[in-house]
Structure formats: structure tokens, C-alpha cells
Length: 79
Image (cartoon, rainbow, N blue to C red):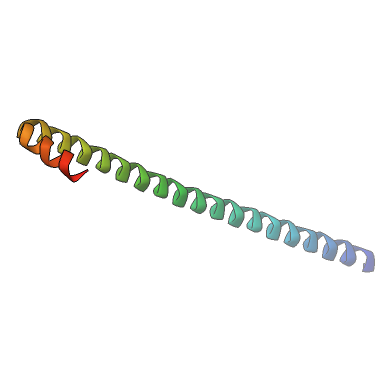
């Protein structure tokens, strides 16, 4: 009986350790996923900002074309 209880104890302890390792792996994977999501969000924000800047530049160019020479002269003088 003494040997069986020791084997049972070690088996249970081994199972507990395996469960802990699995839980740690799951936590690490979740953390990695969260970090990846944050990075993707940052990239998305940067892309949006770049697109907005490009749109603003295009609008300014269109306004300059519509305004004709006067706008171009004003721009030239400012520079």
C-alpha cells in the first residue's frame, strides 16, 4: 500500500504540474495575441493618419488649381 500511495501522489503531482504548464502556455499565448492586436491597432491608426494627410494634400492641390494664379502666387510668396 505504501508504494501505491507514493505512486498515486507522484502521478497527481505530475498532473498538477502539467496543468500549470498548460495554463502558463495559454496565458503566454493570450499575452502575445493582445500584443499583436495592439500593434495592429497602432499600424491601423498610422495608416489612417497617413491617408488623412494625403487627402488633405490632395484637397489643397485641388483648391490651388481651382483658385488659379492668385493662389499660386500666394503660395509662392509664402515659401
